[in-house]
Image: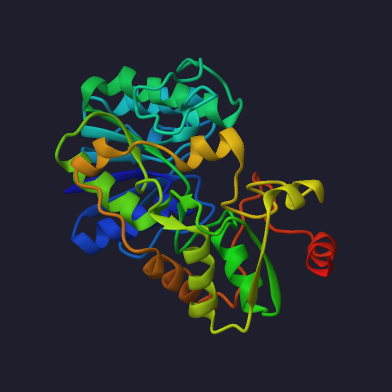
Length: 326
């Protein structure tokens, strides 16, 4: 199989390239060249936002295209239009963020999507992803696969969610943990997302799929206790109710990654994913994801790369101290 990855050097794109190479696919990446792709991939250079920036893609044929773009939808529109006659399927890695809020617990792919167009410039994340979906469909029709990912974690994560928990727990001592510990979490390991996208793209699957584990696939307690175990830490998890956390100004999702309350929890951790499970998604156990992410972090000296366009994650040490002292 011949694969073109638009991106391929960050988080999800890099994992897609690695999984495809491991399967024996012939892989080409296209990006601005800020980082080299994994060894074994052919690198093409270009800037999707610049006039003539797609020139390197004027020639070539591929069985599958995978696009991870998160900015102006017009870039996906232009790429899909250029490649429509020379590629079999176009897999756009979208997000469940495209759904218009409020999104109830149990919502599936039929939920309403935010208003956007394929011609939009750079805007907010949800509109960017929704408009890009339309751009992919405009070029490829039912050959466009829209992989609406949920919370993505695993090795190479550059957003700082699981890496923050691992590094904080590895330091040991009492650690603030958001109660209730039994509350279910929904996420996807980037490797499982990549494998599913590759197989589904090769099979010619089209349409929208919420690509994330089932609700309650793990719990906050299982996740954090697994972090304690894999790091070998002496950390003591102190479970604190959400009312106290909110009263101290702890920001859900940012201050304590994974943690959400109210309607946001229903949205991010309550998606109905029966469609993607029927289409072959097989999430790996959380213990494997946590252990492999810790091994990757240790190989980097404990400091994960972080995207400059995302807010820093983690609890302010002064707030943590107040919570633990009371």
